[in-house]
Image (cartoon, rainbow, N blue to C red):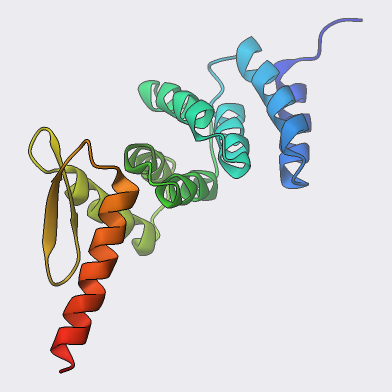
Length: 168
């Protein structure tokens, strides 16, 4: 029997993704992407499947490949929005920014996502070797060897202390 066409594999993989069957989705979408690396949609769905499964390292590598290529076919901006949100929740700001940029590239205009992208870009714009995190009251600059999650916990603690002090 002839091998399944990439588009058929992609469609079957997307159906599994929609049902939450991530292992099957990843298997089919990986094969689709391997056979036709130029189609952005199955690659985006594959990143989403990896992100939903918590396999951010695999997802990130495919996300970078998508960003390096020109757009190739319509991708629902909601796919990239969810990918960005999941990477941000996993403290991978670089991948979140990449996903939100792809959200914009695919036509996404939600001001909430645009605001997240702008804020994330500002957080990443510290001098070389540093990262920063800001809120309405202060900005923290830290060496990039300090894990992003630790920096976020410090920011939350300081924000609570500022709030407590201001209510005295």
